[in-house]
Length: 105
Image 1 (tube, rainbow, N blue to C red):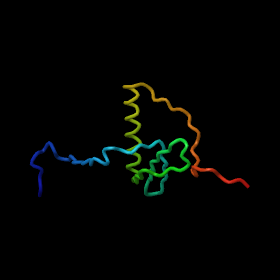
Image 2 (image 1 turned 90 degrees about the horizontal axis):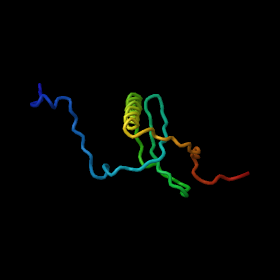
Image 3 (image 1 turned 45 degrees about the horizontal axis):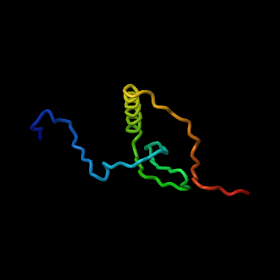
Image 4 (image 1 turned 180 degrees about the horizontal axis):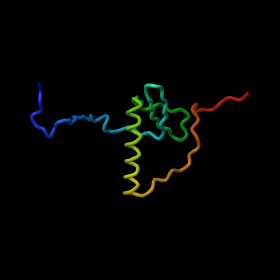
């Protein structure tokens, strides 16, 4: 049986972050879909005057992980607001999913 040499490191996970991922990807829209077995979150960056946008990143989560993520986001927003004040939620018009002009009959 393998036992860790340093008991203080038991249960720790070593997570690496490479330079490209560390730069991050900007997103101002998340589209969320789900099935019985997974949640799919597509992150999109929509720029004014641009009729078409692409998904920049797709994250697929189990329902349990999606719930944990929602809880973690809620707790972090609460801590942020306690430190910096309420985040204003400005009403945004709904984003059409076709992102372009539509034809008329």
